[in-house]
Image (cartoon, rainbow, N blue to C red; front, side, top):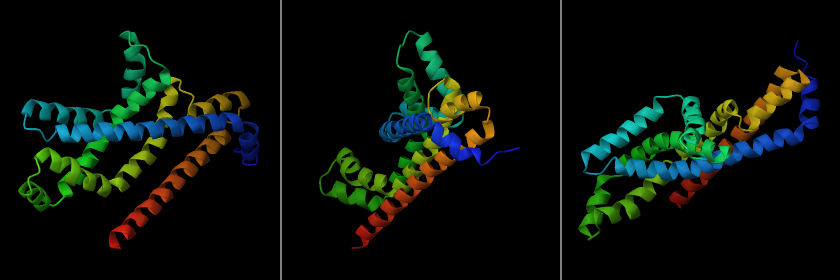
Length: 223
């Protein structure tokens, strides 16, 4: 039987552990979105080059990452790289795994944003003497990123939730902390409900803040 009255007690009694796991989860999500977006932009641009083998390689990269589970990718990175002599802190390895995964999705988001920009703007830029590189960097890409901010925000929310898979790699994020506490207090369901509520607060708050930012940007465009 679930003892709901135990939930507040479990939370406040172990608030330090939950706070530690929550902060690590947010840290992972922040760096993943930041670096994943940068790598995703690079991948999306490389898929537009005139050298076919490079385009095919980037397309294969995106399809492979999107077609395999994040947990499998994380385990390969976290345990595979050290076996090859690449020694890093486990948190950094976790970020690397998340960035690799996120970049594939971000590249598709950015690519869709680039394709949504009217080709007439490119023609106008070229007629004014800009190179194709300048047009992409100063005209197309800024607009593409701006139009895809909502999708990027959704990716941030997804990363917050998907980072829970890293508990299997022994990273002290929120799910790991909850699992460890449940093993000692024997209130497994109640402890996991606490973790679920924290995840909900994180994702709900993030979604609302991103929605507010999007509305303000739209109002700015209308003025």
